[in-house]
Image (cartoon, rainbow, N blue to C red; front, side):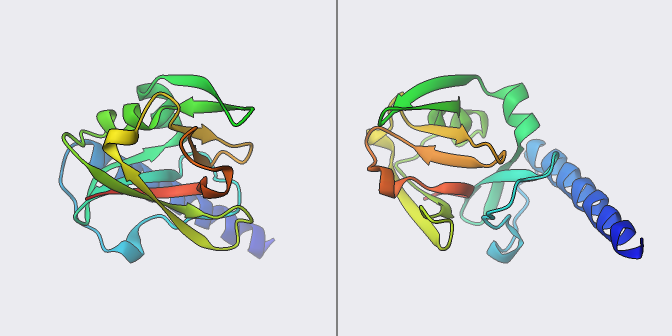
Length: 164
């Protein structure tokens, strides 16, 4: 009983922190956080209200996205990549909605194919097209996929995109 109450309290506190962080970041506060404070890629399903994706530039959070925030703000689409239908927002739409502005290079941080290790995907703005998508997985996490990336280079559980 005590464990379930502690788990419930921890989940509620996490949700409140996520909502506050999302609200502060969406108001363009220019909040700067250390990398250790950014959401880590995880192999577990994300609870509702959890910040899934943080867009940063120079350590400053430009936007912290929940799944509900993405759905309410950014158009979702379907793209077939490597014979598999991907559902979610296009990368370029998420970056535009995050007020990134001009950029030439970014890095997506997530998990590798076995979800066992962290991976980074280098993103060149000139190569982004309509197939670069943040697919919403069955676990309500984000997977970066694109026709221009080999399947082994797809990043699962993407938690941050750093704009250089």
